[in-house]
Length: 230
Image (cartoon, rainbow, N blue to C red; front, side, top):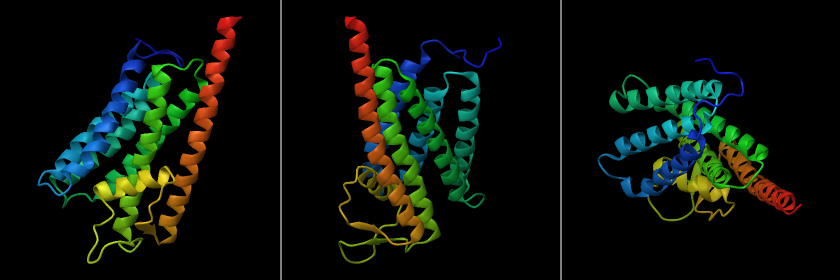
């Protein structure tokens, strides 16, 4: 079977995969602090992130060409992730972090395009909105881990005494989400220029995303009501 540029890959798949994608992201986020420090922490993180890669591919793969691009990026993140987990002497984590960032960025951009083109506000749009917000946070989480690996002094802790945890796992995810929401408790401070630049981009991006999202959803909802009443 040949698919055209605008042909759907599987009718009806998008609605279910978007909801499953958000559920997988929520599982990944909520489980992270509870597996930290456990013996199988890295295994659980690798498994749940693999689910994010798979469901994210389905969520943006409403056309064959998009499925291929998403699948290539997901595979580029999946293979180094598990190679590093099984044989860390063969491949460093930085490869899976960079590939995971590119995949998360691609998924976020595709979901934003879907939001901007939506003609009605329904469960698809709401799931895409939540998925975009969480996926962008995951993307920056991976970047913070990478920056922390390259420069252990890129971030400073202002609370507590003694050695602090590395910028990894739940610490990086916590910092990413608090930065994106512009909450910023100040317990972790970016010090290096690269870390500060990433924080600036995420804080401004998160603020503009929420502003534009609310404006877009209100516009679409109001337009639908006008059309329905006319």
